[in-house]
Image (cartoon, rainbow, N blue to C red):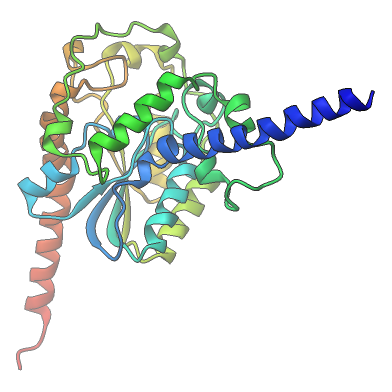
Length: 305
């Protein structure tokens, strides 16, 4: 019996360091990816936040065309909570931003199933590091069905190739267009009855104001006509956001040609720069123009010395 107990203890003691190493490796190579572009003590005009539907917005390209300073922290399957945690990381490093532009729609912020379906982010959710009382790597094993050696390899390759995490014009042109359009009917689920994240959005806005953000602007990224047809109600959500006092810019109907998309709700890579230009024209330019008019009016209103 004592031999059996010793054998079990030996296996457990030998396995624990391996689990610890796996936990740390996956956490560092995969979940740090959205943190890589965040530097220290920088001032930005705009910060783009949200989920994978913000991917087409290439910050260096936007900056090149506008002369502004922009950063995009959006990442696949991020919820409102995930974005706030990333922003806290951003502010803790001495960074500041005037305006936050958040991709917001009914499906965004719904945590049910998203982490199991795509990624899980223990790095963001475990404030005390690896030693939190759970068995190492159990978060990944329990919550993420996609964790494989291939996933780990792609994460490491990403870190090596991307370096500091900034999306350049070259990485924005990565060609995924050889992949056929993804006709996944699960993506056409009707989100019209998803609970409205009223209090979460109020809290998020308060968090931004506390950290010196002047304005939160909401927008909805493009979708295919098929996605629109699958939704029983697309107007009440828009009204609710505007009734809360937010500027909400609906770009969901920008493209009716399915060839612009890789699936029902995501623009394909070859259209990233085109959509970035449209984003500038539809959202950034009107804001900047209004600022210039306001500054000019303030100048005229000042008494002459």
